[in-house]
Length: 283
Image 1: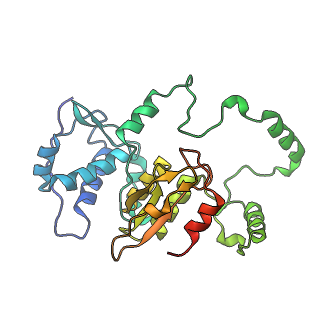
Image 2: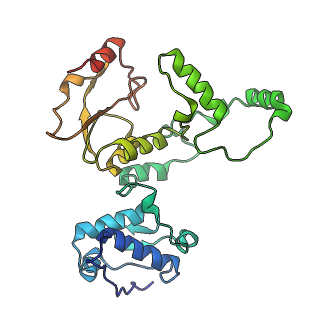
Image 3: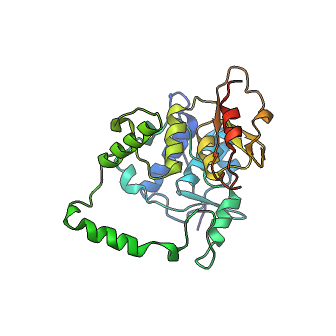
């Protein structure tokens, strides 16, 4: 397929960031069907010249487009249009930036993408942390559904915060361990990554330093990077986090400790009770 001809430049006089104007332009052209799936993009150098921007600005825009699956970079053959699945959304001019704070989400590294590519049903997927299918407790679920019977009145979506009965039970459990809260202060997420994303996007100050165990849960690092934070690894020993090897944070910057004390991912180390107390002690 021929290389696309692009006759457009971002407007440097408006407040919208240049990289965002580029991504908006790409999305609009793909949504309208002007650029077909498989169409080849000009080389990055030529694109940067056409747009009148530096390579780093262009790469930021292209990374965001690749992260949402609109373009694909194929080694040796350049970048191509890989999807137009946003067309129905973009036709309504949805402003996604109002839902997520500034910053693009980074895709998995090339190495992780290759690992996912080569995983098959014949291989136990240790990367997902899922139990083997034959371990699924089918008899237990069958008994549970049989017991509920006519009590199951809805299979619809729950309220955004999660099932009220579940949040009430969590609140009662937290009270037993000294945390007094109310169900309306509790949010049920679909998993740890969603929780980390919500925390990092809403609570982490920009340019904060995130201290983590080295190694730690690799996918959490992608979330933290997308929140424009600085990562700093801390070595571990048999008792867990070697907190005394933590470097002092940058002057004037916030510092946050992210730790997995029980069955650290991926080492499986459990931080000792003594070490946990030491980590909590003020410096």
